[in-house]
Length: 136
Ligand SMILES: [Zn+2]
Image (cartoon, rainbow, N blue to C red; front, side):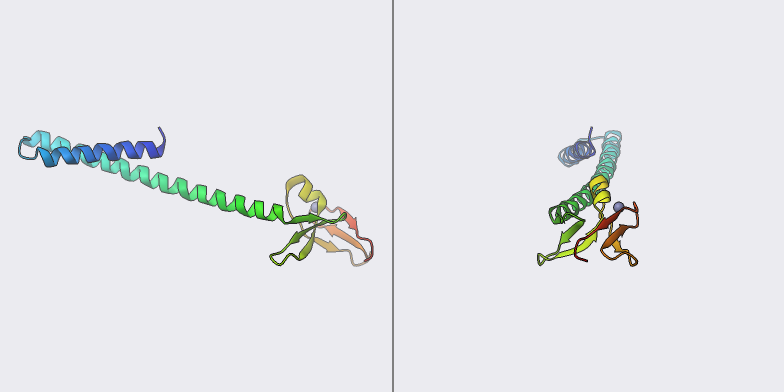
């Protein structure tokens, strides 16, 4: 049973017991009353645990959703220019130089650095691949 269903079942049981206690308070003998109180506490404790687990689950899902939205946003703004990838910023301008090999393989945007001694060449410090850009 899921944490949510378990928590809701325990909560339903707790509410039912509380209603019984209210309706039959004067008719119940001490042992029945104590048993009902004990069951009520158990159900409330299980409800509390179920809700805490639910809270953690929702936080995990929120983190996953946020991460997926960020990945989707980046993916939608990645542009290839025949040499390397660039990312379109909020104003529509292309920024950076990112490794084609790393992005194609693992969807990682690894920034390229200029090879000072060879004008026009860029190098990925991760996979060590080099890229030549005409006109530089
Ligand atoms: Zn690379």
